[in-house]
Picture (cartoon, rainbow, N blue to C red):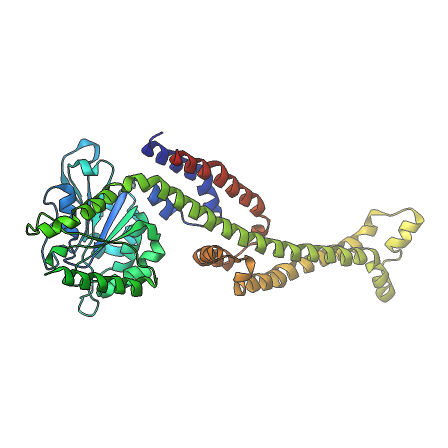
Length: 449
């Protein structure tokens, strides 16, 4: 089974096995569905003039993207092969966000301004047989930047969720000092993807006057990365340049192998696709499982209240059934003969049950009203206020999962119904465990072979 067939099989299993459970708990399948669609994606990010477009042109072996020292393109440009053997063409963003076959329908939320700055270039190149590149607008300093007109950070976040590899590029002159770059590394990317999917690159090293200048720029970038990532250990930073624009210099040959390693890493992105899809599916399973655990805990507490209410109702109702006519006879002289005396005499006329049954029914109605208008609403409110007590977060991983799904649980508890207490939550947890063991682990074993 090749990668495309395996991806299609995983998509089918998710649709048939996992999607119904997500729907039961009002969880969104959009992100997972998007990651299962289409082909591997590499997202290119960086400051303006960091060499993004030059790097893309070098990968393709021809000038596709405009290059320059100043910002040259303010759009997210999707580069890929023509579909179904068609010719090269440009496709506007409006078509992309409305095509259900593509993973970009969710981007309609970002409005017309973004859509007008999103496009696809279909290019005949063997590079794009099973790969798509996204060239992004250069990151700017918010102090001098004019309003883009759309939520740039969240757009980057959504593209990052789809990407199998993210190449974050810097140049020696602006080694990570741009505000949007800081926000992306510090906040946007950690929320969207794993560190293993991000590659840091300092390009245009040919513009350094000498080795000392290069060392200073590299040191500055490493320092800034340590501040932005909050990590003491610095990730690998590829040093590269483009021979298409650099002056011929024997010193540059030292970095030729580094440049080739970077290009190979980008071209190997398709091999990571299935692994990333399984990571996303596994993550979704863990998310919905914790939601189900929370709702199971909620349901158990609610059912305990219902059972206690029913038990008390039957005890009180039984007492009223047997003794109500004794009380009414004592105070108003009705009925002439009580239910107990009839039981002792061995003959009970049917009309003898009217008053006891009426009393029992009244008790049950009052009890139900007490349960539905006071006890359960009070319990629901308590759960909403102390939602964190519904699950155990004994590990850092479970804390992270709970942080992702807590809002989903709050939404389910916003307007709960009594029938929610009797959903088969425990059975649904078993279904998720079975899906994980039977399918996800099986696919992991397949790609390891």
